[in-house]
Length: 219
Ligand code: C5P
Image 1 (spheres, rainbow, N blue to C red):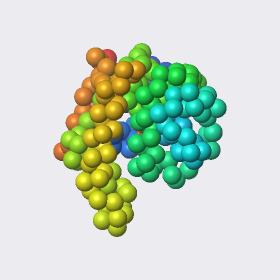
Image 2 (image 1 turned 120 degrees about the vertical axis):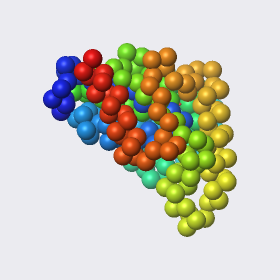
Image 3 (image 1 turned 90 degrees about the vertical axis):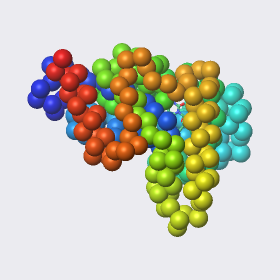
Image 4 (image 1 turned 60 degrees about the vertical axis):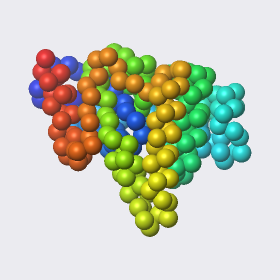
């Protein structure tokens, strides 16, 4: 690990939170700063969803989705369609099936275990289910309006032709689906640090996260 103050030789960081809270950007930056591997676990659920959509399958079909997750086509992780709103919506539907979650669990745990210096994983259930022993757990939030605006601007804002209200509606629906499902619902782990980025830009969010991680490293 790059941090000269570190007393551990491996660092595992779990980052959870609702859609478009800025977890991905923050997680990448943390991984780069501390010399850790990074896994965007949402991309795995999105890849399962995209495969279902491409083959005309219904994301609510648990058996077909589990089959897809067990034989995940990892080239889909590079597909630009992974980031589309429809893929995100379908991802939160396939993510409700316990069999899909079980099929993706080992991959996520092995990724963290095999990372030489440690890893940062971002998702919804990393601190609670995937890596309950993580050294540092962060739960990133922001108001639904701010999150929807960030996502809308990422899509191209006015030029995208997608109304802001549609993105907001989608963010709210996805939050509800992710928080209310029975298996591995989105929620902060009991020992997670909450970080509200409503009023923070990425630099400020990163500095806040760094203080938490450095405090843990020096404890
Ligand atoms: O983070 P992202 O928006 O790409 O995630 C897409 C969907 O995948 C989420 O709405 C959620 O339903 C699901 N997901 C999950 N558990 C994770 C990561 C993502 O259920 N660890």
